[in-house]
Length: 452
Image (cartoon, rainbow, N blue to C red):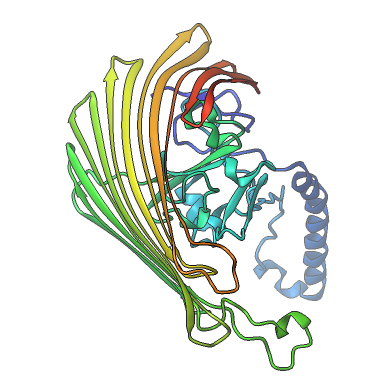
């Protein structure tokens, strides 16, 4: 395992293994406050002890010895940008399992909404968690689970609330353009949720259940089993929340007089099944198969009335990944992913949308160490196709639009070469180029140069 210096931390210059959390130095303000508070508290303690000795001189010998504080340490527990560590020269912000466990979050939206530079908003298109990274539009943020698209329609901003948030090992945040590896959809950045690998030492079961007001219920169950060669796990995640409570009859807020389309009779529910099988036929070969199924059911009611509209989405996912280690410094990874998404809705208008996606990616990596510098060279190719089929339902009588159908298939591919370098403990760089090909547009070169 290769070690890298801990970036900008109190451990600067000391090796840190992969997965180690770098502890940042305490902020200057709390340290200065401690320097001023320590003498004052020591003086107050001394004065109190003297008064007790004068009043109860007869029992002075029985009183416990005073403890003098040499220093006061103030630990700052405010949420900061995710810790940065990864076994490559490119920095990746990480929210690990321990950090996520300490957060009061039941979904990815709540886990990331306090991260600086990330803005999460709701959109009229239906997304509860459209993500903007450093101010760029949400259409340029790629949302992934284990490196693969998990939910969301083609060519539309992803919804962070639709990502699997169960059995999570860590969340990776890549800021800035990531189009070289993830296509132009990742021009603003990437958020990648990594789930835990199946157990390799026998059976295991993890469970979690929580509830709250507004009919909120969350549950998670993850059984698994494995040995040194083969392991598997199956995640079931359930979430539901009811509609908005009716306003108080005596409220003077003018907005409370408007009818709510997501009233008390409404209910939002999701069911997620996500299975993983990991196999190691040999020391140099690693295989992972993932199968997912998701149901999202939104029932809408005006105030506390009956359900008047419904939005239901069903989605299948199948992914196969293989990794071959070629010596100590080189590896080849191939990934195939296919998904199918069907949306039926009567919210606003009635229509059915079928959305399918297939992608094949091949990437080779080589680690090169030249003196004190470290370089990773990546050469890859990817090809994908996605199709959209739209079938309109009846149109309201007061709308002058003829219902129609849409059927379209798009092809996309690319070749890329990336060189990531760690030139010093304080200087890293990334240089790369990609040839992007699209069936609806002319081919283009995408370039990237970055130092930090």
